[in-house]
Length: 229
Length: 226
Image (tube, rainbow over all chains, first blue to last red; front, side):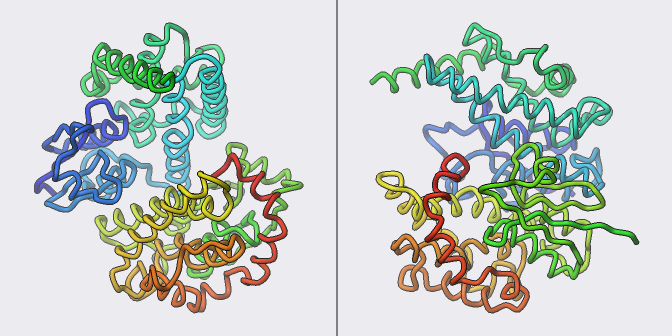
């Protein structure tokens, strides 16, 4: 099931990174097109006219947008190689539920923490901590045996989505100069993230720490400037 | 087989009704339990959906599944007759894309257009018109989003097919109108007339009366949700 596989993405986007991880887990060869989000390519606008966002996967000329949709497409199209989603429908439902939670509930507050200060930041931190607590309880309830989904050394969908979003906590902590992911409050989340970031694939594929720190600092200072203006 | 299937839902919720439509299409029997969301959520709901405390929740042999799109996929994978999603991976991706678009863009925009006030409402109305226009384009003269028969996207679009008309009447706004969206309005008519859909829609006048009477309660309730 070869053919041409092109991914339009951006090095720091967790959504884009998720698709890259999925392709790498499956061992699929692909061409990566780095998009400048301030100057999006004509191709991207054509491939994703509805959202005009990355990531977009173009398989044999046919575009697919939305990272979770893309990853499920990858799993269904390339059946050789490790599974990205479990086989059992109930386990699949759990994975879909928690990936939705990570993307829709946790990522936003984390971004807000980065982009605010003072009272607004306190509120954002509080919200993020509430979501982390829910995630901690959720892992306890849904995955009592241990880290949510790493199957052997292969990332599954939940790992693929969790790694870029939660792995960024170290970057956030360095930029803010304070702890965000408290190991004592969130032992299961912390040990899961730690296990993920130690995987050879994560070490190879995650954006370089220093580069991400630089970007986060830039995002933060620009956000604070425009809030003050 | 000793299967136990229970749905925790609310009669007026499009999300809850999506699940009912899916189960009816599949011909699966289930027990329905009506939740009182505003005043008294059942202990069962809080136990089965501790994360969001929302309906719908499908409980299959004691195992709870929450989030309507997740539930729909679960139903499609568990009961394989009358598939909701297409077979081809690319077409499945397209269907999932539009389901997400409906849930993440269309529903909030239309809801806020009718329930919000001031600048938030105006902005939402602009967005709603834009998003519905995109949907109209996607329908491209097909009878249903799923082709000749109702499919995954049609079920998810139930909010557009039925609730939008009621909400805009209650709010006195013009969003989904025939002059602006002839294709979508025709689809809505076909959708509502489909036997399996017809039986699983809350009666229009009951819904209108409900939204009118409850407008304030709902607005406060949903302030933090949509």
